[in-house]
Length: 240
Image 1: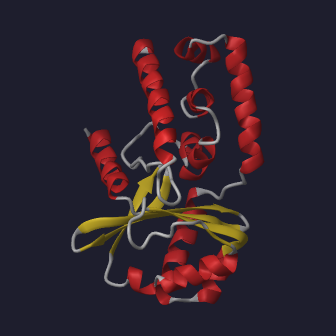
Image 2: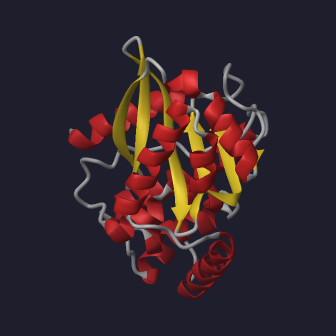
């Protein structure tokens, strides 16, 4: 088991390093690949928090080794000694790396709402966007809300982040036709609710959000076909 964990972590670090290079040529915002956690009994409330897309996006600011140390400790509760063996570092260094990562992430993170409130906000946003209700959308968003669309240049995906309550609300209301005729299915990604839109039987868009008690502060849209296919495949892998 220790060998498998070590090998998997080293491979993940290599993938993260190569992904950083690929993102330099990526068109538009880049988001972490969502993972279907609906059938994973190991993902509890605490673990889910450590795997949320919004947090994983912030984690990209860390080095691959620091990211691995933080996730192994916070998401999977590995002992510092085990992490040190996996990363081939001293226990003292691992403790320092995880501590620095926590401080760095704390500066960028906000308090999150629980799963029930998250689902309610998601449903309210979807209903308001579908009706083109700008006032309701603005009431759901924080003043500094941001909308990120990951499409790697695909048509319909914004190539720059949309910033501010008014702009995000106006953009969302303009997508009224986007929701019309779509088959919208609730899914669970990285321990949180999201929606997957199908058109003509094909999955086209994944959407989720991050919210604090003050409201929705981040909308995340994935339109890149490869990431959507990987999300659907991740559910099959868990079931198997």
